[in-house]
Image 1: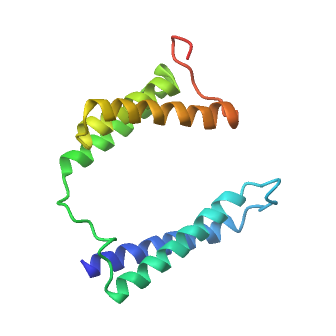
Image 2: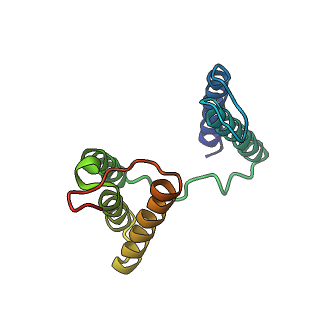
Length: 149
């Protein structure tokens, strides 16, 4: 497990450094007035720092928290990828709230096999609070359903 954790961590570090180099080509701006390079630069730096910290833990032999403990289920991966494609296809037609609710509900029930009550509560909370954050507070234009919400 140590070898695969090391390779994965190094790949994330290389990805972060590549993103950092490319983000440096964009104007950065200020915190009060960010430019296009602001968030990619910050996020790539955070990914690089996280990768270095995880790499140190893996090399010290303490990768228990990093290693995946359950068997990979290709069926669950396929269901999640299918759900992502369905989300992309239905996003404009059904609108943000409905599509996000159905997407999270499907992931909770079919992929993660959670109880109905928990799946409904998490799906409702995720769609509602993300809509409040992006649609209302940040004023991001989100598609509405044919029902108007």
